Image 1: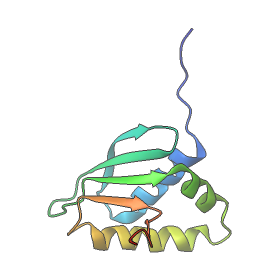
Image 2: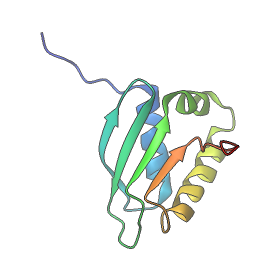
Image 3: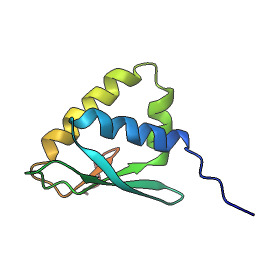
Length: 99
């Protein structure tokens, strides 16, 4: 029995965000587990950013959001800003974790 590769809503959203970051930036590889999708980036010299870790639940919420286009644009700008100084970016960002 062969396994058919299907794109999930979460993978499509992750690819949409990566395409919106910067022309020339591509997803080199995608690794999945139950909770997250890790996208390794390639194609943009001068960036420190090597990967983006997306929460599957966060991507599902984003895909169903009526303001999706605006939020994808904002997210891509945030990732591009962080790309010069960080090796990894997480979506959604974990805020308030410091006690």
